[in-house]
Image 1 (spheres, rainbow, N blue to C red):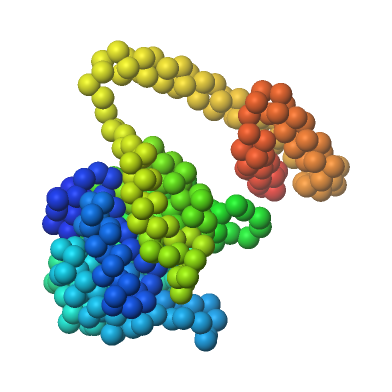
Image 2: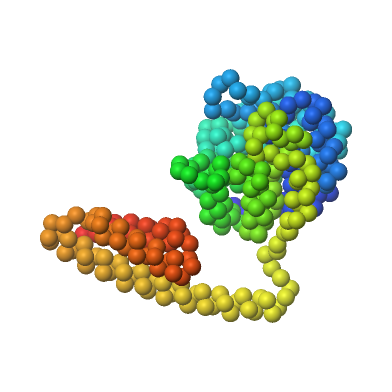
Length: 357
């Protein structure tokens, strides 16, 4: 599937410069505040205004959005500020409302994109409309769910489809609200190379002081642009206050960020990279040979364990290996968590080999 419309050809972003940016409040709160913010965003070159109308909350009783009334505010604000508008839809009824009010684009939230029934319902409701659709990744770090949601919209004839990386739910401690797990959007782009890709640093970080760093990382990795939550007075926002930034902060951030290209006319740089990549290819071949040798030894150990009635899992030995490789990583100035992840995968594969004996 490679017939996606490139984002530079989207009429939605007409007049915008790279990176392509969608910005606005997490939630539409009032007509006046939305118009005031839209005018500020328009002054700094933002052409697509986002604003949530229906907010899926974990617990009832909290602010769940202004609903259908806000669709009219969003339409009127877009017209007054000369901006295109986008909002989240989570079912066919929401689609009906945004179509009636002339909203220019929709996005599919993380809670919805992981539900194939809802995605199909929304895709069918959008069939034939030609509306741009931004598909956020599901909460779980599963590229299959994300890819499947995108495929459902494509199969309903929608061409203007963009993936939005907003991070993933994760147990355990993290400085992020939703850790980025960059390997997932990388895999999505490998599978769907023509698909535009934006980053939502607001939801990844959950903290306004980290938004710029994640936005920079995304652009360095080749993302096409950003979806950022912006509020004139973030601390008083009715939802996601901690992760929203002001229009002025967005202006300053965009002034510091730089896009990168996938190619360069600098022949010397290209030749130098090619030479270094040849070295990487040689090392990769050596790694494969070493892993094959390691698995062969592991199989031999497994046969001995079977004859001797020993368990496959030897916790003491595994703890010893882990401590040793982490120590070696530290000496070589390698990230210890990175090495732990690699050797945990190797250990799991070794046990699987031994279990088959």
